[in-house]
Length: 147
Image (cartoon, rainbow, N blue to C red):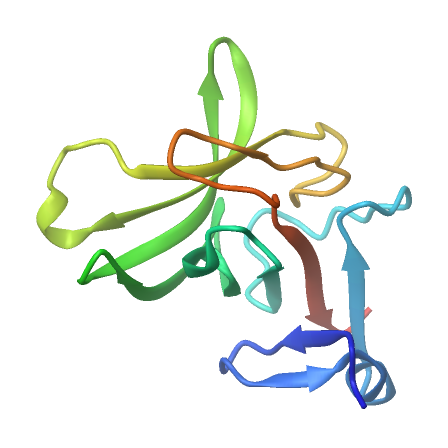
């Protein structure tokens, strides 16, 4: 059986052990050893899992300064994203969604985590619920091919 899975850029999932055998590298967000691979690595994905708000779980692709995926929320097609923002004077990672018809309205925020300035990824972060999010907070992993 496979307990740990890795989301691939195509949206499919593999067992972590199979992914590593194929040359993939997985970095859990709670690891201390980080690697800055640059601001726009197309081969980087983030897998979000075990969130109390199930809609945020899934595979997010690197899109320059944020990670995104398309899905549905509240009956609408939306773009979920993990992005950096300044919240109350602090740099935060925010896991949120917005729909095309939302216009200039603020996105729906689910979870937040303090940015680790030494890493371009939301690494070594502790997610906490925002107004809409619910416990438990998500777990996340960064994956990419190459080394």
